[in-house]
Length: 417
Ligand SMILES: Nc1ncnc2c1ncn2[C@@H]1O[C@H](COP(=O)(O)OP(=O)(O)O)[C@@H](O)[C@H]1O
Ligand SMILES: [Mg+2]
Image 1 (cartoon, helix red, strand yellow):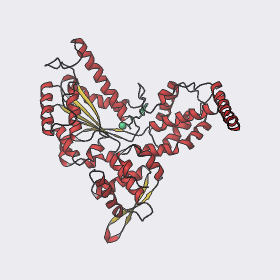
Image 2 (spheres, rainbow, N blue to C red):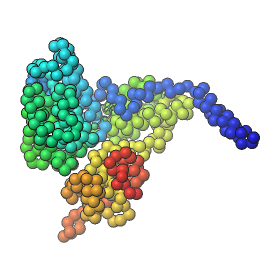
Image 3 (tube, rainbow, N blue to C red):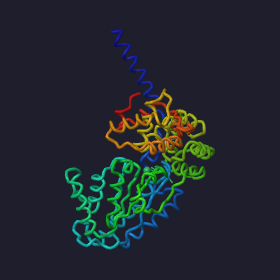
Image 4 (cartoon, rainbow, N blue to C red):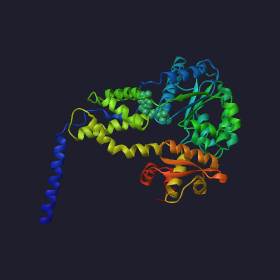
């Protein structure tokens, strides 16, 4: 009997909290526009980059193969979103062309209509082997599943693609997003070379890192010759405008001081718009939890405390797989006197256990420099006289953050801390 009474008391306690929350106003803001995958129609302050890329690709409409492009810039600077929106315009025009000739697909046509531009978007973070890439390109031409995703020999697949490109005779724009993940693969340069040898193909490579160039071997460098477009970090004013756009889209009622405060706060840490949007989303959560109507700097400050770890995790999650592996190595070796020489063998061991290629010690050292720039480790160069130079290493993030950021990736299983 007593048990029953206690249970119903607990029940009524929960019900009271329930009721209190039910009588509160629901979130008045539209949070869907603050979702990490949401992309606004208008990407602000990238007009120059869009102009350069479109002017380079537009010749494809007239049947000419555009020159290759490489887009560089830190994470969250709008590279992927920009390229996808440009491809969307090509796609819309393709559909219009098909409509005017009364067809839904290219399948019925031997002669591909004038103005039609083939294009394909490949995310090398998930698709970085020759077979998968060639298969995706081939099947993008006619929107068909002609080649199976496994089972053919590479040679047969390549020949089929060459034949299809010849028959199609229209230019093909191949976007390779996060191209670092391709180049750091055992045969990455060979795969890229195969693509560069195809007729009518124009490559648009995207990288979060300007040093990606160092992974191109000489065969690639002499053929790729890309027009380079750099997506520089957003300035404070630009971040403020991007903030205002999201605040307006979501219908958030903001104190006038919040815009400058949030812009400056984000710029201090990174120029990643994902971080800005995530901070805004959390700040709105804090505001609503406090029952306030207007978003203030105080809400942002509380959200900052809550999201500090999230920013670090986001940075780790956005690294290339090889960079993540280097970071895991450093975290694994922590507590010993770490330098380039004594951590490199552990890295090689981990790479091999995952079936990944192991980078040379020089490239490994280059990646340590990158991780240092991102604030995840410190890598201090020290001169060891006749023994040359090395980098003394320190981990600057917690192992817990690394574990959380890499959950669900291929690296999850090798983490032992
Ligand atoms: N100039 C911008 N204006 C508005 N939103 C932007 C802008 N740049 C980036 N974003 C937002 O940030 C997110 C990350 O952009 P993305 O293009 O994926 O970055 P990157 O590929 O450079 O890492 C996108 O979903 C987009 O909503
Ligand atoms: Mg991207």
